[in-house]
Image (tube, rainbow, N blue to C red; front, side, top):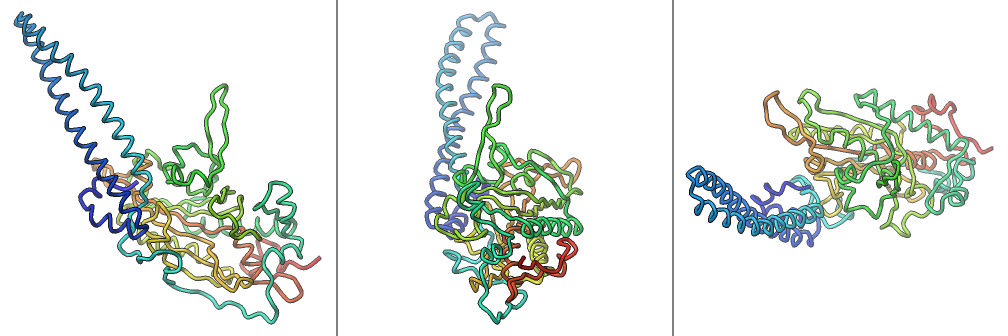
Length: 433
């Protein structure tokens, strides 16, 4: 959630920055400021009435001590009438606070000044590329075809079991998924990340903390948890960013604990509600997939540098596997809701002759921590400050497997296993049986 106080002081600048994301956000921000002004006006009235009530109560006490019953009765009547008016004003204040919160929850993070202004993904500048796409002496097949020929991927059975956009990896495919998960976790944990195995279900307030709710509820799967006769809603996580970041929810951390670096391999679940007709073939956009996540919790002044390092950590996994990739800087019109700055990492997919996203690394500034009340103290007696939160895929396991199947396919139908992965997979290639 944006800092409303700061936004109020720099309203023109904030409005312009939000409008660079989407022109409609300028009007939404204006409405938020109007609600804030109305709320503050009611707050001033309520505070004045409370002060008047307190003064009258003290005066009643003095009148009664002086045995001035007439004055005391008059003051009591005034306080009674004042309390009646206060009830209406306090109700109006609560309603105004709800309207402000609802409006503020719909406003995305303010883009950092270093973010390029652009309307959509076509205006994302390339930061760097790594590796040269392989030149095939045959027409490369897509990963689904390669996987099915090898007996590693069975999309038909996935659909039979769970419906469209569900994959079933089997035999060498299941082994590849397992090997990649272990490879990624080992790399990140050895570079200073704390490995975590979190719950795959989370409470609504946890998703609200990292901005999945209310904005992206249509993309979430949810279920009902019964505790005796008491029912509560739980959501299946769409990314372990949700639970990893919320580990510091309502905490005040000592400064020497920062930065915190966390990683986890989890299944992720997404409805993909807004992607009908996109990437219906293969495993690029499934409802269930495995992903290794990277999360940083930092001091405010360190988050931008942390974003650079987090992105390098994610990209290094592709370099280790000899996969060509590029890093792009998302423009204002293509950024995620909670992010103030984002880099996407895209891996080369030969069958499509283009790069496809495999990781998105974002600095969310204090946007999430304000929702979560996640703070730190620079010194023992210093006032608490909001931490900054960052997250990135380190990386999506299914997409990584797809990239290996495509980039490493051979003319005889086999697939070479990247050298760094051989100790985890136990063989140098997947051969046609």
